[in-house]
Length: 143
Image: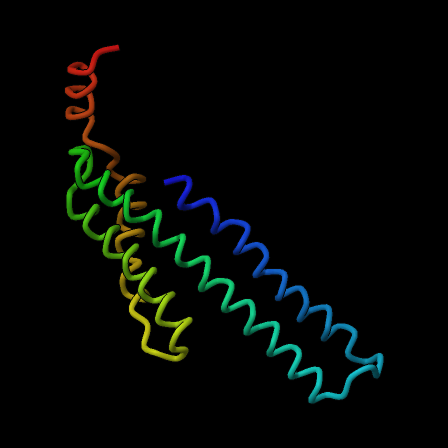
């Protein structure tokens, strides 16, 4: 899972550099080096590059959710439905990233599938794992 999640970090950070480029570009807009339309075109280019970089990171954000969902499903410590929702979220992120890169402007599906991630986080914060099942497996495995 770490191997799948790790590439998203530098990709997302590098994509955010485009936000800084827009800020820098528009902060120095008064120096007269570019016309207003040139500044707007450059700003839109940097914003578009940031969006494409985040779509690339989205592939890896989705890929690491797939094994997490399988592990949650098979663990017995958490409800199986959380595992299913995590796999659905991961798959939808990968699908959306691919479709948005190949066909920009196509309808997005991941805006609805993040629910699995939210429910998983809330479950861990509020309810936690099934401690009895955890201890049963730990006793069976031994020290």
